[in-house]
Length: 410
Image 1 (cartoon, rainbow, N blue to C red):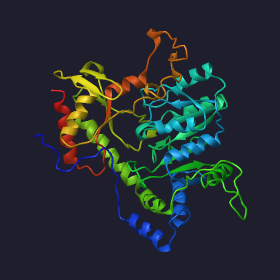
Image 2 (image 1 turned 135 degrees about the vertical axis):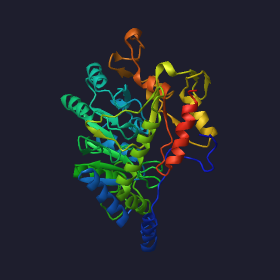
Image 3 (image 1 turned 90 degrees about the vertical axis):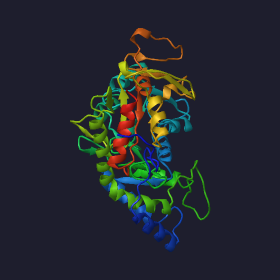
């Protein structure tokens, strides 16, 4: 196949619109319900509950806002330690810090690239006082949530489930976003369904839902004037954004099917290359396949060095690395992305504790037995990358992307 740049950029994951979005946006405009009250919000919350199987949903301005409200509901206070997924976007973790909490990062397991239950159990041995766990499902793939739930229940800990990337994914037939005490989804512009922005707090607790409705509208009291007895936030979703969400959710299954087809085409197209796709538990889970990712075999990695903001590599025959592949994709007008850089490697969080299945990987003394220390998240970050996964990408375009990647290993 002749390799040539795409005339129109192939994106990592861009919004897929259907037309009904304009109908509900126009309805908000024509009825003059442009703020944070209206039928679009009511309907979007209702259909989200029906999809996920929870009792209550509160539409908010972003997935991050919903995570912040979840952390507040969980009762995190200044100085409280909180266990968090390590390999994730920092929006999973930042809300803990908003409330003065101290994130402790739990290493990743290889089976799903999510929080390692063995490392989580080890963390409770090291920090038995912890009562809140924030767990994310990476790239739309459910983690080992039953094992994580059992561990949390044994230690009396609350689960905050970050399902921002996994809306529509299931574990043992149950939707992600329904496993935690407080659960969060996102409608950011690149998610599997979008509102351009927005998110939701999901719960089975009416009291929790009512608290978030109050907090997210500046914590106004029932009084003839503006009365405030606790700290509030301007976090409610607008009725305009909710119109987009309302129109998008019915297409969730269609989008998942398109994303799965992309994943399977990559898997087939990479046969014979020293790479594997991002894994999932085929027996117990069905991802939403939001992003297709690949991991290069260790012995097929060329030399690659990364600083905080730059990367270099040395091209070698029959070998490649994420930097080379991402550079080549960009050359041909296609967008890829590195794997999320683990939180314990981030400059802002690198002094926080990090727990692996072998124990405390980085306590305040930085004392651990290096020969036993295994940092799985760092390894996946070094060898992995996110592939163009836009569900408007044609099979022909994907064939070209596969050919581009294969050329990197020649």
